[in-house]
Image 1 (cartoon, one colour):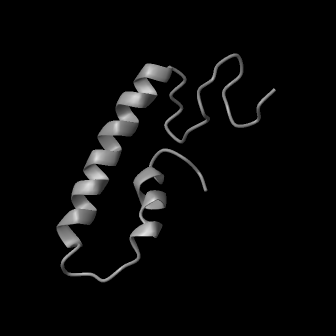
Image 2 (spheres, rainbow, N blue to C red):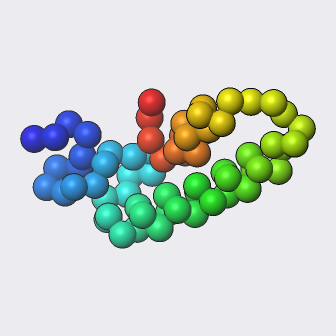
Image 3 (cartoon, rainbow, N blue to C red):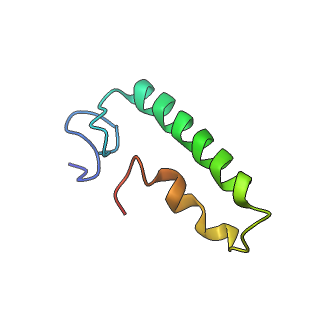
Length: 64
């Protein structure tokens, strides 16, 4: 049994409690797009390491 997925599914355990794979894909994509737009709007104002931007993009969905 994989401790990172909901029982009897292949869906990663997430903060939103979504157990339907397609619904999670859709919500994840929407949140990622929103976060990318937010990050990109500040990119010219802030000097940061782009390699660290994946964590905030998924922070609404997964625990780290």
